[in-house]
Image 1 (spheres, rainbow, N blue to C red):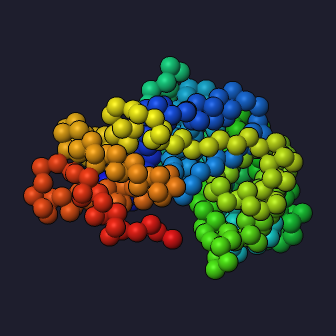
Image 2: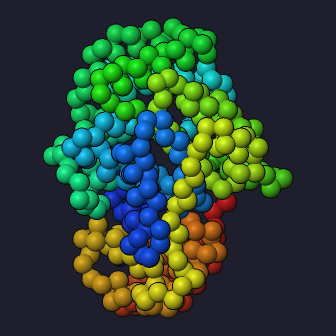
Image 3: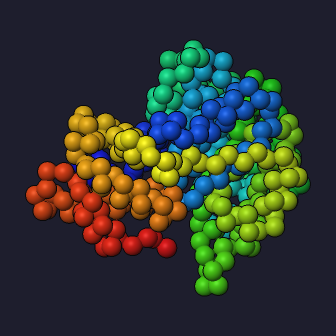
Length: 346
């Protein structure tokens, strides 16, 4: 069982263990995001907000995967993992990173692996007719790529924000003219929410991310869909609310376990069950984990601010401890001991 709780090593594995909020009695933000991206007009402005480890990336990829599997999809998704502060230090640096990636892909805008999106789309069946292949994936053919292949070489010589903005607009125009709908996702932004020695998030980096990256994407013409994953601490930076209001972003919270309610079985059961099934373990969770241990894990969830990554880290350590003790079931004392031995990550 401990192996089933190991951290996912790839994005495909990450979305493969995603559990929609409704599975444990919570809200379904994925349904609203799906509606906006599939039925809403181009130029959607979406913020997905949640604590570290709460499932922001999984939620976003799940929705893109579901949209991309529809027969009439037009989604072309570009995902940006904000790797360092230099990438967002200026409009020039940010656009050079985006356009450089498109150039390296010979004019292809989408950059999410098809396996990831297919995995996300396989999580739950919708009533809408789906394709056999995943059109939104990186490796699926698109009609505009040949048209962009030559012009993207000029991206490498552009050095001013004005030139780079116009190149981005050219890319958007070409994609839209070919019948596609460009979407940019800004992810992996929690690094800037980490507290410094004064107990504050990295205010300058968050400001740069919003004003240099998010603003320039929202100003593109024709309009492109923009999704930004943020930590709740972003609200401590003035540019966050200014950006949200100026561009009309809607905020969607990652679903949380309804631990304050007396659900039977405890909501975390659905999370563990999904991981067991993905690992080929068909046993009922309650045959492997005592209810008191499930409740103890939910207490860890509360203590560690809805960080499911932390909960699963403790759960895996508890399983290893229980196995070493020869226990037939995971018990609450195993969880308590693992919790003490594995303090919250800073």
